Length: 129
Image 1 (cartoon, rainbow, N blue to C red):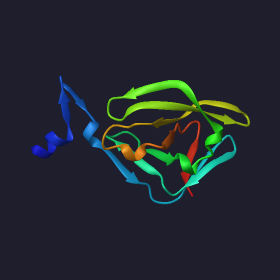
Image 2: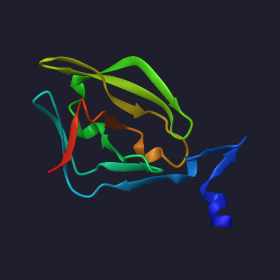
Image 3: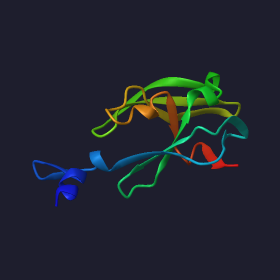
């Protein structure tokens, strides 16, 4: 019973996933590509799993060609992870708006994803090589 109470937080009748977020180092090396260009490679990718949603890969900025990314005015708030900042990818074929996001100051317990970018799979390909 205690384990179940610890895994789920119930507030005003709503069940949140805050305590079901899991981080792990994604094994292997990953290539990050978009619009025919390689944006980076990394062996330091973090996989974030949140409940039954598809896991999201977070790539360190230090492993990306950040000169191709411009911060946008778009922002969102996740009650579990914090405030997300978005980036447009300046590709040779033209801008790809809000292709990536980052949690600059993620909530407690998720600090490992600070300094990392995640990508929309229909805009940027992140695959193990």
